[in-house]
Image (tube, rainbow, N blue to C red; front, side):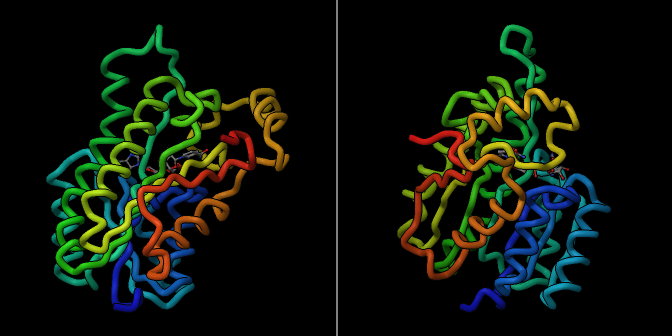
Length: 253
Ligand code: NAD
């Protein structure tokens, strides 16, 4: 089935300068229809409008809290009723937290895991059965270099642990869904110029990170979006269970 007869779901794509919005544009440019889910309903609708207008595909944006199964179910009922079936899912919604381990609370730990891990579970658990039935699917997780190198960028232990959980999630799911024609991969970006840190990353910290980045610049959202669109292509069907670094060489292993 051509991707123009399928919908790609991107969570957390309401953010104006975020990776999700850029990914929605990259997928739409490749012909995918888009479902944009974000806690920020206005942002989700704005992304959907932009994408439909610029690329001439079907796109809708909905307010959805991926940590809440009822909210995810409502979004999926909307998609099932009016849109081409889901062929791709980009688990992009995420939050970070810089709090050091010796100060972190259980509440903060749970908050970080609720979005990055449980949220990704809620939506993937709902979408994957249809993909497996149809014999085609592309699932991509937004992990982080923090999962691989043990933090050291901005996020603390909770963030690194949650992003590492996504790697195990993606790899085990790749093994389970491969026979059904569904690939599952993770991308691990280094520091990308978005608003996820809420302005809490100061210039000195940035300069230190840049000094250890061979490509000599922060990543931009298109660097990550292009890679995700590549992994979602029909032709990328032999790539699964992989983690793709997109970090300017800041972590080479
Ligand atoms: P961002 O803050 O710009 O966008 C994240 C989006 O997720 C926001 O629109 C937010 O409203 C949404 N969101 C948060 N909680 C949600 C929930 N419960 N339900 C639905 N939506 C929710 O962030 P970004 O920098 O574009 O990051 C996107 C992803 O990439 C995240 O998973 C992040 O951890 C990962 N990542 C980012 C970087 C970076 O440097 N920016 C590096 C590595 C990995």
